[in-house]
Image 1 (tube, rainbow, N blue to C red):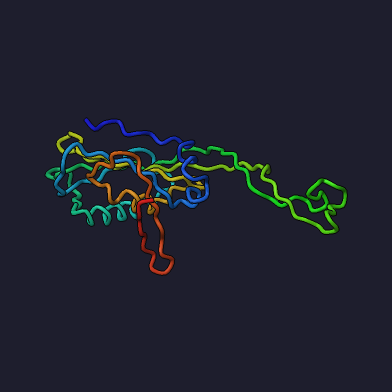
Image 2: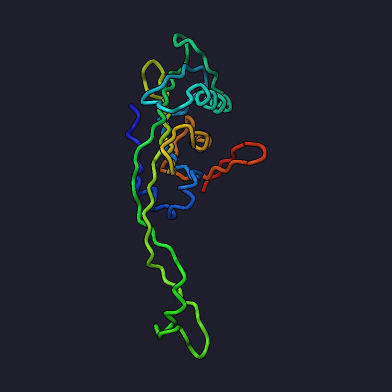
Length: 208
């Protein structure tokens, strides 16, 4: 049986490097496991979990393209396929994080808090970092689990933090993020930075 993969909590996601790149939806946390080497082959694709708001056909076409690049061929007849690949694309949240950010102090306070802000005859700018704002975010997860005769052979999971719960968004980043870990063991949670080329629409994934 496939081992239980590590669950990446929202707080753990936040701890990576603050919220900036995660909120962009470009940094994908990936965890994968395969107990032994697996040969690519034909597969039947099936869904698990809610799909509300997801353009199912477009999403599955993207999965199919990614799996084809790994040597897997989709069949639409379950009987006779080498694998049954079950996917689940879901969203949880909203969660709230507390952030601080630097802001310029009112120049009238002055460096020494003197009225008028005059210090040696000149205004001087001071900075402080105790402004606080609260940010709402969601965590989206994509998982693929492959079975051969109901025996699990590999699994991969990707998580990304996003500003909206819309399942039509961010899935291509998740698909690109998990691509290199199909039928592979990551050994630990790894972070993949996915960038979309605005001119070509292509996605490039690199280990962060």
